Length: 306
Image (cartoon, rainbow, N blue to C red; front, top):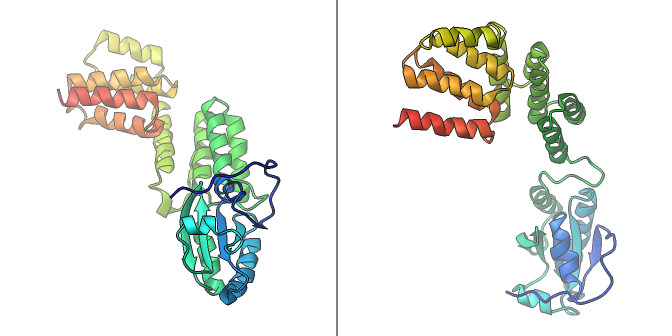
């Protein structure tokens, strides 16, 4: 199916929630606009009684959605090319476009409750006009934290929690900020706000692992002292294990990984497979996409399956 290409004309202006379209403006009004938010195209005609029933219901539902969806109406008598190409054989017909493609639709004049349910399903997760986009704010916070600005990221996560106090990614992110700055008690208090049913969330588990590792680091000696112990006795696996914990606390991930891999290589069964288990906890705390995690998993697999 090839949609008629948009003709020339003025560039698109700021559109209202509800508008009429033509064969020439269909691409702009529906396909291009649906890349910003879902768009309903309502095919109708003057002689269609059910259309006169449905259109006011559609318009009311779209206005109530407050910018989450737009409604574009096309008179099929005046503009038959598009409905013909789309195989529209009876009206009223409503087709939802999302990201430039038809995504859903219905035929006939359905009740208001069904129209509202259709729009709710279509716009799930789409912010209303003027509402903050939580997903974008969370992404911004993650980027700020990734740049090393834990305090700045904490402020952004707090902004999200001001809008939604139960937002799990924001709670986990704020706790991660506290771990990064060494405020372990605040991190634990923040994570305690996560409901028990959400404790298996990947972000929550990662922060819990980071907290556990940070608390372990508080009970081991300084790096230099541990390095001396390992140099004096390379078979002192506990000293090497503690050294890895201390190195991780200094964010020396590759070095921490190397020490634990050395234990696995020398004595896989030491401390009930403790070195491998600690590596798994490190990988969980760092996140699956972290470069140190990816490289560490490769090296661990090489040792285990060689």
